[in-house]
Length: 245
Ligand SMILES: [Zn+2]
Image (cartoon, rainbow, N blue to C red; front, side, top):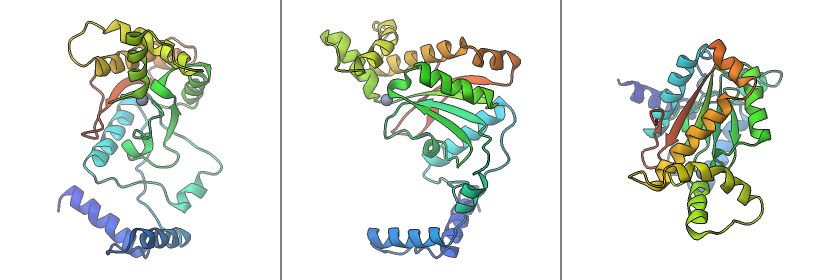
């Protein structure tokens, strides 16, 4: 039996054990059944022990993303028992800076559970003091990896391109977001290929460089305890690509 089919069988058994019907129940009926299962204290698979260095952390994220992309996530550590275990303390091993886009939620893309990763999200992953401070806090909590993740069809980057091309300024504080993404777009205006994808990757690159120079994070990086990696999420394939530079 392949690993995937073993996993599927395990998940199926876990659901059946918790009284969840896998039959042709209507959507509403299925939600009610899942809700009953939750009240009975269903279990989900346990995540393995936490990664202890940046390489292991990256491998763990890539493994989880492969499960997500193939349509076989295991949704580890999401049971009521796990939730209660984490009440007193958390020890996340990675921090993910991503866009607010509703199609790119880190826990789902990397198939990780409660207590595993810090998330910081802003449109276009734009850095401000609150975002930088949040990631510095994650570094102080000894995460092994910070992932800066851009994504396909990012509306914030699209808006920045439109603002440059049409010579317009977006309303409210959206103008701040655009002003922060503008240098990335301008740096690839004449590069061949998709302007949107090139600009999104250039933006990730600039955000990584800016983070690397901040206090706390720069110290954790020089100690070798922390690594920062850039990535690009392709919605079509479901794959988060870490080889973008
Ligand atoms: Zn976006």
